[in-house]
Length: 109
Length: 121
Image (cartoon, rainbow over all chains, first blue to last red; front, top):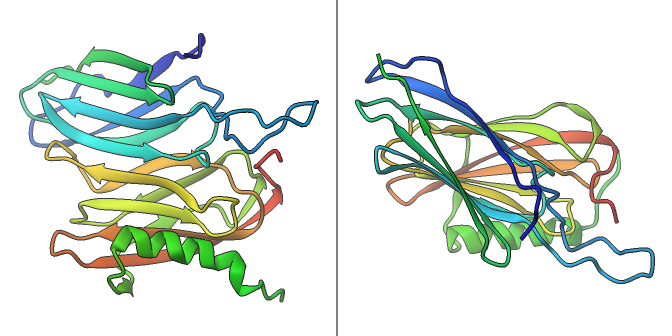
């Protein structure tokens, strides 16, 4: 598990039911590709966020599979279809099984 | 004009064939947006959109491994678009393949010229 994994999320200040709302997410992570070598010539093992999901009101918004070709500090932008639900759950899955979850409230007005 | 050897693209073709299960892929139906020139291959902004698509997969045909990401859109998705930032080891084509609800596949490609490669090898 990496010690410095920190999610940052931007939801719209307010959203209207029936409309799309743009979500921006970024999680601090080195995304070590497994292709690099250290100073001694040993391959540095792969350690990436390999999956990211966003659920809204208990339904899947987006389920993303990530490879080593995703940049460090993975940034993902997408849209939620706003209903009357407020809970937005973001989950990042790391190689080795660590899981990072963040829940935020969408203000539906 | 530099002609790349076929083997450079074969890995991406194989990866796309594995994704589609060998189904034929038609051109169009997907929009892929990326900068024409990326000064830093470590972080290249890219957006994909395919109205109605269940999934969109992204491949970089000149990277050591061609797979980049697969977006699956769920019932609470507000659109069939997504943006992220990717690593490109050099100038190459980036390909988006959309899986449509009827089981068909559509694709589009865009060339990105990379000044400094992003695979740190």
